[in-house]
Image 1 (cartoon, helix red, strand yellow):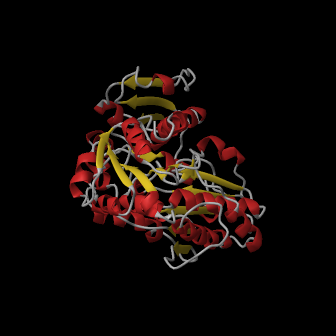
Image 2 (spheres, one colour):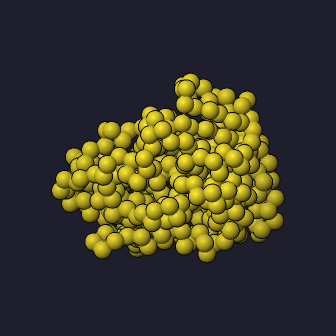
Image 3 (cartoon, helix red, strand yellow):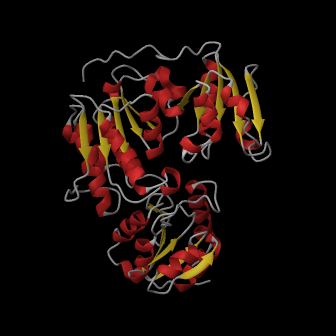
Length: 423
């Protein structure tokens, strides 16, 4: 790959001695990274979060005391958004066009940005591969990263997976490749703020999701396709081929063959050694909480937050009738019929969380409504026979009972390791 000249850091924003309001730490503490980076740029930062100081205690301890940092917990104040130079919004805030605090910023002429836009401003587009999709985007992005590294290129993984790259910008060289997993919300913000798109854009799948954030499925689809809409002549666009295959993978499932084939195409767009790239993808052992094997009987697929993701997880097993699956969680206002239909294929379905009753009402086969994860694990394990498999693949987000899908998956791992079959 030819050498790339990167723009001056902070291009488009003169950050020294400016005032910035960071809107929320985020469910994954994403606000911490951008706060520390802004402070390093000489910005006076006000960090504001609706949660109480006690609720944020563990996250706040990660921020070193700084003379240019002010923290306000338990509320947002209009003046903090309308009388500053920069607002860094949390992309998790649903329907930002209706948010009174962001509206106040826009109406006052304040620049509104996000962490991902600040990252992309520091990178040349030619070195970025962007990946989005309803299902498979984290795995596909990680497979691309593995292929590039196996081929001898220095690659960095960030965005919606791998954490913020702001803190490691100094280590990203002009000849490096940056792989960014981009959510539909991130793409909405990138389009609104700058019309940015990656040089190589990858779309895995589009299924109904995040209607609560976007307001409609049509708007969700529009935002996913923005990864292509803002590309320029000479850029590369890649979509998933549903007929593709990829042999000798270390991860389960036909869907991962599709992810691998897509990743292989994207990596090869960087003119690398194809044999080494293929080997890198084949050696990829998967990500935590994505069909992660806990033991011979139990698999953690907590990252499954759509009905299709659950179907694909069940499809990964040769005999679905031997699968006992735990489903349910936060209600994203999407159609759960496909999720409920999986009850006809499996050995048992156990529904938890806010959507548990809804899933049971949509199912034509018996679904055990368990409410909590620990109850579901106990009931499932007591119902399983020799050779059966317990699968956590919720098909719903985690926010009704857990901070995030990682916490849900970790609790599942603890429960199955502590519970013996047929107790």
